Length: 279
Image (cartoon, rainbow, N blue to C red):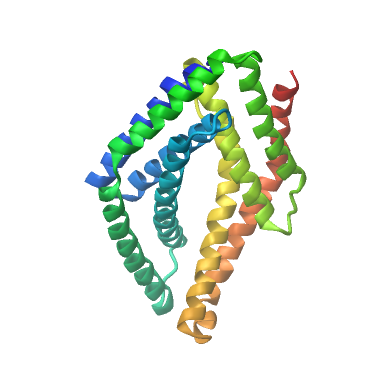
């Protein structure tokens, strides 16, 4: 397990470099895949910055976090639209109303992409890098002087994150899909922390079981978001569109419910990680 002062110093800088790399890819070619990778890089950077801010009250870190969260929100909107277009195409349904919806999504994607490109161009990378460096340096000093011990502080951070996941797991309700989404958010943060502290060898061993579990929840969320978007679109276009898009909404419901069943059957896989916190 990586020492906290190393993780929150050099590893935080490593996440920053990864984010900058993904940012350049997006600036060069803003595709669905490049946006997805940028979003993941942003989330992982924010997770490690959050971890650092658990140990120190740092204005530079708070300012960097606020700016990065604004970027994540914008990238998230674009990624959602790209996901919706992809899911819609995968259903292979056609008709005037469905084609109109696809065209509307394409226009919305183009507008959001233009907004993201402008936002990324305005991003002051040297300033953000300086803020993160100051935060990492301050955390390293605090941890080196701690009488509790850096390993114990790291352990406490992971346990606290896991307990939040456990609370949301216990609150799961199959009839309330928001509970699955809430679990996914907490689990994702724990996963990024856990994997960040893991050895390089452990990271190279195939597809992470954490990711496989998270993806099952993500499948539910993707279909649910698409369903809500179609409902919102119908409200904008008029009552007649609900009837015209009934076959589409029925198909989305079928796919969503299948994803819910798949996750629900595997939900107890979560318990395999509980022992790690108790050992």
